[in-house]
Image: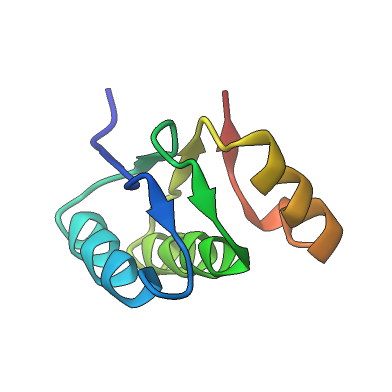
Length: 90
């Protein structure tokens, strides 16, 4: 079973820097999945953070799975053309 961490309920421009740092620490400690179940308030900054987390995992030779991505955020990723960058699992 993979080590996972969770996003908070909010991942917007205001919280992106703190969320990025917290997630990077989890990835450095070996996390290979992020659970977005709690994520209810977000903007495009959430996509930037998710992609940055995946880049950090890739640099460690791992893949970061994105679990339970909210439908609206998945639609936003498709609109921006970055959905293929997210390793989304349900």
